[in-house]
Length: 149
Length: 149
DNA sequence: TTCACTGCAAACCTTTTGCAATTCT
DNA sequence: AGAATTGCAAAAGGTTTGCAGTGAA
Image (cartoon, rainbow over all chains, first blue to last red; front, side):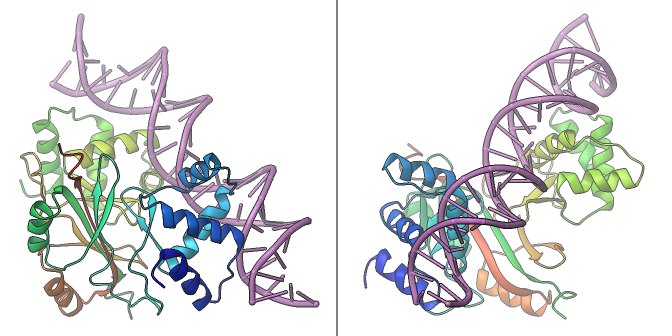
């Protein structure tokens, strides 16, 4: 089970979801396309390949896929990318080394990275990954002292 | 110059923008309201206080204010918060210790934090700030090796 | 067979645009 | 005066909802 297609099917079944034809189509699509895209972009690209898919269905499927960790939504672009670090188990609450991305503002290329020290990370990014960091977004989501009670 | 109102006026003039009445209204509003809000929420709150403001104008002003560092847009909420760490100079390219937020998923309370080590940060958040981190978003924006040429 | 899922239409919400009127500097 | 900014209306996008019909388990 090395490819995205196989993993995705396994994850879907592990979550007791149905492997329907639009889902299969989207999985095959994500297997071939690694750049972040909006539901409309996906719909149009599929259409240009002679495949028909409803945008609403794509919305719903991407939502599902995000919940089970098959795709990730890039907040700053409003686009979805397939997630390569798929785990069959449920997602841990804190994905420390996951969902860190380098996003090119120009061509929207997305690279997944890991590591938790921002200073070290920025050095690595600049030198090894040859990516020029202009700004970053770091937002922690959870429950504040009041709401967690 | 200790308050937000004074700082904001200074920043606006430093950027050669005009201190118009809707801008003043918004500054006064942000001075009183520290929770993140959408343009519509701001419009409605102002209206309930007997103040009239056009949503489109609020959109445009918040856009301007974000550019000059008076407010920050919380990506995960689509809402704006006023930025308390205002600098009169232009923003540096890498705001290392800036724009790190704790966002309550329940009440949308936003707390600004600083520090660059995620592990240490999460410990501090858990113990000192009494915030339960459920997940975080870290996205670097810039130019990839191809596009920076 | 049954329930999850899809497809279509329509509603809804958010954000942007154009332009004439206004108002800072 | 001159340029920036606003207000209104309207368009343009993006996302969600409802529901009848379809299809996977």
